[in-house]
Length: 432
Image (tube, rainbow, N blue to C red; front, top):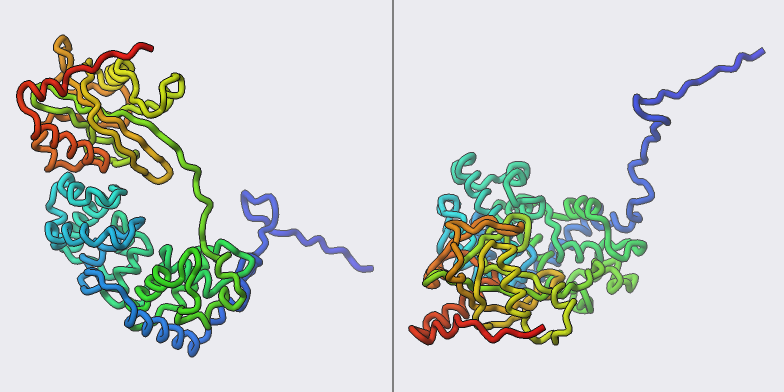
């Protein structure tokens, strides 16, 4: 008679069920064809040669492509994040003229760094660049590290930026993955079941297999340039693509489907009022708090009036009532003001926000006792200063703040005596 044997399954502590080992290539992996090019050494080398030959004939000229200086390459890569290439060049030249090396950047005051970054947006990049420069001077003797782990330990440097520095400056075979190269590789190595492209984890693995051991910087720049000039998001120019014979998406006719376009967020319309508040010859500036738009930059006091306007019958092309704006400033800043002339209206966009700004002159009420430092009733500001209009050129302002300052300086230089007081005179009150 056979005895039955009770086999007990070993269950790790804290697990209510046995752990099943995952297969190395589970159902989430791409089909075998995706791995064909990265795995075939001869085809991979031919792909690299054809791509880099095209790049040498068609590459655009930019100052950061004419140097192997890791500092200049690092600065350019940080500037190019989320910014159009053509817009970066004048900022890059101006920034390097003032901060030509790591030591000069590390020694600078953060406000000066932000002033030279002004207009590029995403100011956290500038603060991280400055902090990383200080750490490089402190920990690495002013020499930019040439290994990925150390580079990625610095503020603002992720895997892509580290790969760009290592390949462009040191010719190390480091992969890169940004918007253009991601789109190119997603189409060349396409999986028809993934219209938004391959997952990043898999793309990084395949990009690492494809990057050549030598001339990796030329190859990486060629990959990005192909995405910028030929492998476009919409209407890719496949007929002139030098590597279309390697492209799975082109062969299957699905290149338009695999574009990596995420659904656009709905836009939000905002209406704000900005107030240039004078106390004698000085105007009030506030520094924006960390975590919000234009963090660390100076700006003029602003009040969002979208919700107030929704409650009135006032036509949308008119600024808000003076008494409401004065009350908003009193609540938020603790200042009693007398509103003056409306001197500027402009519109601008920040990510998904479409913002209209009405700008007013104002003066602190004569009966008000102005505190030595503004007491903030709401979050969003961290510091305050009364400044002469002539000093506005030297401080870092938000992009809207710079537009207001330029208009204010034009008024300041064009008006004297009685005429200037006329600008600060209150307009007639509207009846509600």
